[in-house]
Length: 193
Image 1: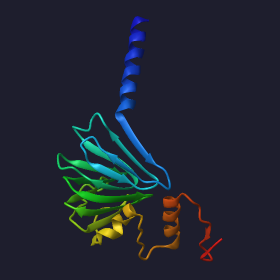
Image 2: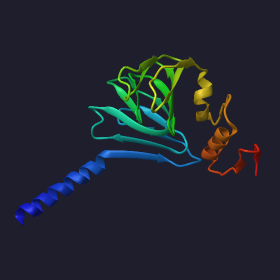
Image 3: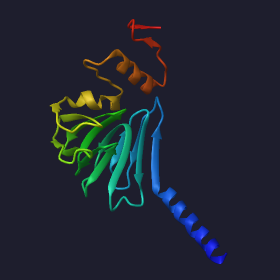
Image 4: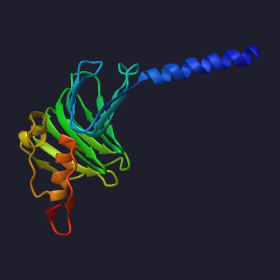
C-alpha cells in the first residue's frame, strides 16, 4: 500500500511534467499569431494552423510540428527542424514559409538554406536556397523544385494572397480560412449559391 501510493505519486508527477513540457499554439480561422520560440526564433502562424514543440527539450532538440501555414525566422544555432507529417525541413539560421494542408506540403526558402526530406524515402531530399521552393505530397519522394517571387509565398503576412492556375474552390477555402466565413459554391455549375 505504501509502495502503491508512492508509485501513484511518481506517476502523477511524471504525467504532470510530460503534459507541462508540451507546448501547443492553435490559431483559429480569421486570425494570425506571432509566437517566439525559446531560442528567440519567431514563427508567424497563419489562420487555422497548429504549432507544437517540447519546451523543456528545446536546448537539445529544436523541433516543431506544424499543421497549417507558418513563416519561420530562425535564429542561427544548432539544427532546427519543422515536421509536417512525413516531411521534415531542417535549417541553420534562415527564413522560410511552410504550407502544410491535407497531404500537400510546400516549403519556400526566403533566405539561407533548408533541407527538405520525406521520412518515407530516406534517400529523397533536396536543398533549397533563396527564392526556391518544393512541393511534396506526404506519400511521394521529394524531387521537384522551382523558383518563386518572395511576395507570392509570404504575401499572406501583409494580408495579400496570390493565386496562379488555382481552382476556384482553393481560392474560396483560403478566403474562408482568413476571414472565418463560409462561402456556398456549387463546383458543378461554377457559380456562387
